[in-house]
Length: 264
Ligand SMILES: Nc1ncnc2c1ncn2[C@@H]1O[C@H](COP(=O)(O)OP(=O)(O)O)[C@@H](O)[C@H]1O
Ligand SMILES: Nc1ccn([C@@H]2O[C@H](COP(=O)(O)OP(=O)(O)O)[C@@H](O)[C@H]2O)c(=O)n1
Image 1 (cartoon, rainbow, N blue to C red):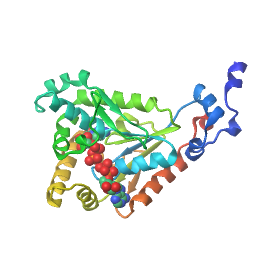
Image 2: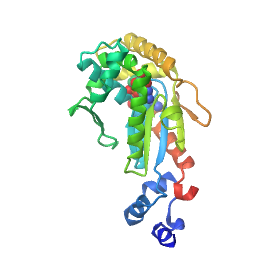
Image 3: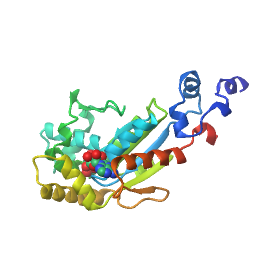
């Protein structure tokens, strides 16, 4: 017992904030990682389409030295996979049957984000309006959700960084309800539509707004991402610019997250 204790980093040397953990490298960090005290900081971010979840989470992860997981990418990639298997998306049994052949890879380093299916890079393809319009068909199926929730938890558990920011619709409630930091990122419908239509070319602002509103409606039948669950901090970015929103997330993580060594 004494021997095991000696292998642990001495408590006064271990930083107890996320900022400190991000700087916590080298031999001390290796020893900490190898010990049974190790538990990365998990930051869960939910919110509606266009609220800034992906871009803000990625930039915040980068600032914190954390990994970043975009869960919407997996729902999108799975919808693409099902379409590529010539499956009728309105046939739940046929869609579910394609889960075992879904060879999904995601880059969780915020500086090296990619999504691959069957070894093929689909990072851009999964953002096309065609895929966006088909995601709800697969995301509403409980079997698909269970399968992907397990996959997301595995990725969170496998991070090699001091923490991981994971964003989606049900991260604060289903995927990681015990995350140290849980955020609901919101913005007015008007702001979200303006941000989305500024991104999408080749489609009118009205059409983008119509699609976004339809998708919010479909998605909210499956999970409630418009109201914060107990213990979840709401961050309204309507009147914040991008950098201010990232800063707010980073500050929240630094104020809430403590290293497990400090908890124990
Ligand atoms: N606070 C903000 N102010 C202005 N633009 C923002 C803000 N947050 C995000 N954006 C921009 O809005 C767009 C949509 O953000 P995105 O991260 O794709 O949202 P989501 O993942 O929630 O759908 C992106 O172009 C992003 O740069
Ligand atoms: N945790 C999640 C993440 C996404 N999704 C589904 O995947 C779709 C695409 O998610 P996304 O995060 O890429 O969408 P945007 O908010 O970026 O537009 C959503 O419209 C949901 O149908 C989900 O059901 N649960």
